[in-house]
Length: 342
Image (cartoon, rainbow, N blue to C red; front, side, top):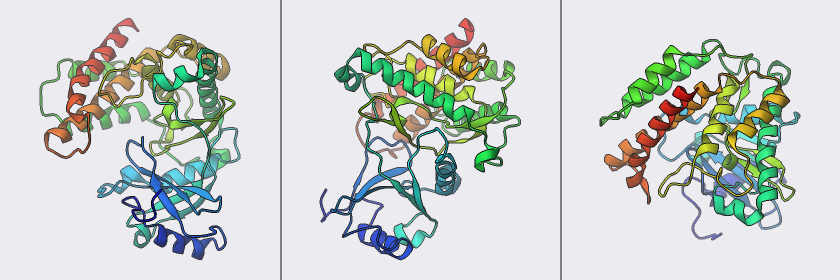
């Protein structure tokens, strides 16, 4: 890391001054920071003091407009609440809502060593047996999350579980309309079919909202050391997390895709085995899971279409965005196919 060029969005000197005021003695020297790549929305930085101290800082993206979409207090609250449960999360150290420090609210948490597996190649390097253990550990950790009593950890009012699926479908439909700039064959059929066949939700739990392999840190013993990126967490239907996990597990690598696709790695269990394990360990009825998986395809299609739309307006930076629009029809087709099979 270079002292001369701190990453955009985090001034190490101002951060150290704040930490010295709030937690005297926490840092042992000048701070250096680097942006951790791979985040989809909020910015994540590794911060070190040169004497062995290491922390992680999370803040909204630069130039964010909608505070509710990047709620630092929400993330800080949920990982603080889960700290003494079987769900592995980093220790939350400080929440700062004073935008004068870094230009936006942020929170500081402990640095947890581990690997976020994002590609088939990363998993292939550890071999089939270990890949299998990593995938099973991911499911077991999800079962632990959904077993937490929200009221017992202070999250009783963390969301509005009543009508959750209907609101989710409406929310992502609204997002679709906001970025609709071309004909997308089948997407209205997918949305309408989902709306006509809403399943009855099981008892609400704390849900992650974006649960996948590259949103956890895996240790050298192939166990989950920390679940990260809680910005979409709430109280709601736990099968939305499982449907999303199945959707990711079905993906095969596509050049230019921003969607993690690790399910084809040698040794990775197929989605049916992961679902069976979740059902056996959680005791939940998963017979309606095709609906939840199709909803995950719809949600990702809308997200990718939004990225494509911003690219057409010249509002994206980086390589690969020009190909994202080609992926959207694949997600629509997969969603429709999943509903028909289900």
